[in-house]
Length: 411
Ligand SMILES: C[S@@+](CC[C@H](N)C(=O)[O-])C[C@H]1O[C@@H](n2cnc3c(N)ncnc32)[C@H](O)[C@@H]1O
Image 1 (tube, rainbow, N blue to C red):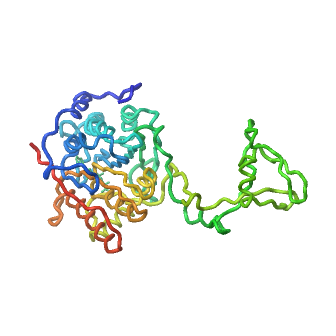
Image 2: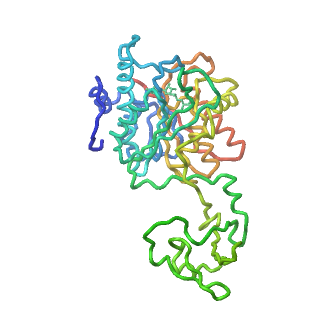
Image 3: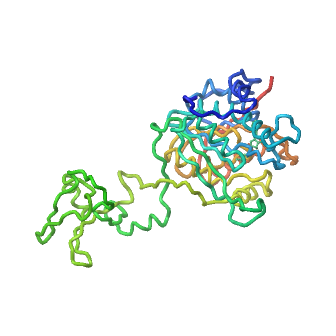
């Protein structure tokens, strides 16, 4: 844990901290080998499973995405009402109990991440404030990346007399922010259409050679006069040019000098869509509204013919998060230890198929019972979803990593 400045305290905190380090109560069947060349689906309580996995996988995971119970107090298929006594108790007790559940799991999650690893946690208004304090403490405030706001529904609904809730959050933390490469994602189709010209280097757009902005202290090597085709001298109209004189001379075939509408010489450069063989990408934003909970529900209906668990995440959301943090075509291991219906598994298999990656998924889900005879536990829904996604991708001609399944045998 980083040298903590402010610590959240609640009754039960020290017990919860201890829970992360007492030996696991059980073993995996069959015994697990840690080669990370297959998808691993594990049934069991995640605290014990994480403890069993840690010695073999410490500092090996690139992305952890989790969607823990939000402590809404609502009736769900899984337990989402925390209280230490099990009885109807006050709000404080409910928070204490949730914190004691999540704390040891987050302590362990931190240990699984590589130095360039990232943790994403979905959460809503019920516990976001506590979760953020805990993560600041465990990861260090300096490793906070963003609190992404997800607009999860657009329709009006019930929920609150004062403000209709439409959003929830994804907290993102780096294991070590200085080592984490920038996040990026593909340009949108309309951004690509903004490259309307083409030459032997592919699509390009024309941008001013003078850098915009009014910074006061220009770098001297970026300010120099340029000779126009008629021999007149062009001075930089802003604080600096984009390139040094040397680069300007070397990349002459990317420079255009034209008269603008006012008859003044203006210099432009070609900006190509592809650079060094790779298509440009953009930095993701902290407001996310590409999909809603309705998309998550629709996906589940398409896959199973009915909605088997409440509010599954839309796989596009998780696919985007993983894609931001793990480069196209990579083999970065990705973990979700509150796997639910296996949305992260589907997201990861789809992302691999899309960008040629071989990222292994490590999913943990307990065997909470369901009322469905063919899929009697949430774990069995998760497993079936990953299998069906794999089968669909195989039919579409994409190879997926093999899937291995394990179960925690409690001792
Ligand atoms: C919010 S749901 C995750 C939903 C998932 N993201 C999806 O899209 O389907 C949280 C899940 O964590 C599981 N869970 C809760 N406590 C757990 C534990 N101690 N070990 C393993 N799974 C647990 C619950 O059964 C539930 O399915």
